Amino acid sequence: MGSRLASAHLHSPYRRVYMAELIVLRLVHVLGGIFWVGAGLFNLLFLAPAMAVAGPAAGPMMQVMRQRKMFVVMPTVAILTILSGLRLMMITSGNFNAAYFGTDAGAAFAFGGACAIVAFIVGLALAMPAQKRMGMLGPQIASAPDDATRTRLQAEVARLQGRMRVVGPAVTTLLVLAAVAMAVARYV
Image (cartoon, rainbow, N blue to C red; front, side, top):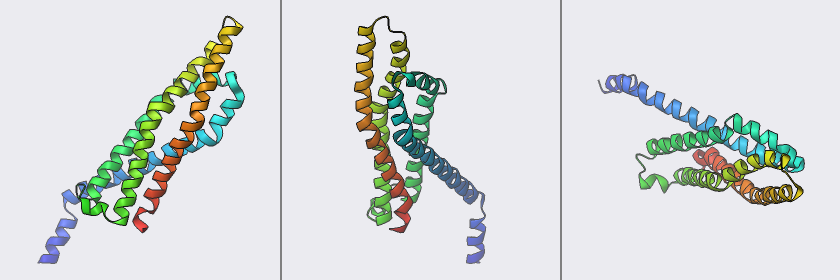
């Protein structure tokens, strides 16, 4: 009788809803994380160096990224990744039970989540405004009425690029640490 009840519970509508939630959450979290970390690595290793070499000629590329809603898509993906991760952590930890975080797996997931949240905050507060501003400065440099204005705008771009040479690697490092922590958490 007990096994029949357990078997019936395994196939109940509640279990199906629970499993559907887990599947959707994991897909959103894993695919969002892949996109977020991959975009960070692409930007750090390829896009930012290419744009630095291109100088003012990179302005139109930033305009296209703005038109394609990069500065809306990236934070949206990051937020969905973080929120789905928090819900998964809530489920896995038994509603954020402190004992779970005392385990190696719980600590690894918590560390990874903290890295991702800090990366998001730093990216939103420092990297995104700098990228947006650089994108706006490109056309202004191209249409500057005189050399003094052009020089002043180019100096601002150089200052923002300097900020991004620090912030970009920091954010990407945090994202890679988050991904590594999440990837190995079940095995530590």
